[in-house]
Image 1 (tube, rainbow, N blue to C red):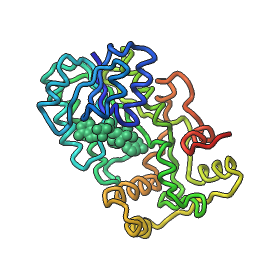
Image 2: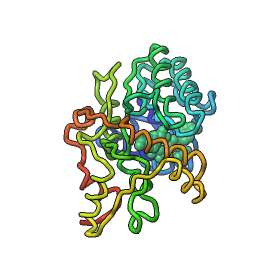
Image 3: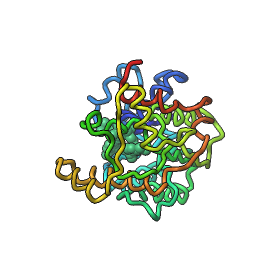
Amino acid sequence: MILVTGATGHLGGATVEHLLKHLAPHEFAILARDEHKAKSFIEKGIEVRIGDFDDTDSLDRALNGITKLLLIPTIVPHRLEQNKRVIDVAVKNKVKHILYTGISFKNIEETATAGLEAHFETEDYIVASGLSYTFLRNNLYMDVLPFYGGETLYEKGFYLPAGKGKVPFALRREMGEAAANVLLQEGHENKIYEIAASELYSYEDIANTLSKLLGRSITYTDADPETFKQVLIENELDEFIVFILTGFNVDTKNGHFETLTYDLEKLIGRKPIGLEKGLVEVFRLSQ
Ligand SMILES: NC(=O)c1ccc[n+]([C@@H]2O[C@H](COP(=O)([O-])OP(=O)(O)OC[C@H]3O[C@@H](n4cnc5c(N)ncnc54)[C@H](OP(=O)(O)O)[C@@H]3O)[C@@H](O)[C@H]2O)c1
């Protein structure tokens, strides 16, 4: 039996959507913290197991009889602790194969993003646990670009401390599809996949493509990281979000996401969506 965590979220939701194309609703289960949030899954006939990464007993009940587990971590500062709890409970419940969605990153020792190393520490913990694993190291979501652009994108353009760094931005729904295929297929045990588009994009590329799509100029300004952080703080963004936003973009500037792989392409059986079509989708532009 498959269990998908994070199913009420974006990535897990996309995974479930793809699973439903190949499995009957009763052939897998999802983990949710709250039955109300999981209403749409219950209505589809999917088994909803209530569990919280912060509650060992709930996880123990939820993982009973599970053989394949997709662990999508949260973004909270103590996620390593949560992940270790899930892994321990998975071992106790004799789960055979765990899929973990971490991050595709060149040199984690040099990261400017607080807490990012937790993904690699989780992977080490999984390897040490003896469970069969598949590590789906997701590169950055193209879906976050409207958030990175902010409310002033159309007037002021992108203002980010990302330098000339390039990122193989991919759609979260295609990453979910890849995760679903790994759940559905055999032969992915003890493999590591770098999940990313098959092309690299700079913010200049993104601004230029968006300009073309909108028929108006969208600029990109390379921000000084400290000034950028201050601007976010003045705009009353949550401190943790400020660290994440600054960190991811400084890491971009330093080339840590500049990895070109074809793992996503192989896992979904086609080229991932390109920049132009992807931007139409994430910015909800009609063509
Ligand atoms: N690669 C990237 O660009 C990028 C960007 C952002 C984030 N990420 C990572 O990718 C993960 C998934 O992204 P997403 O967009 O799908 O996130 P999301 O939409 O925020 O979904 C997070 C999911 O985690 C669940 N969750 C939160 N706390 C939990 C807990 N204590 N126990 C059990 N489940 C819990 C949420 O359940 P509820 O519905 O109950 O809240 C939700 O289903 C993030 O958490 C983060 O680690 C990657």
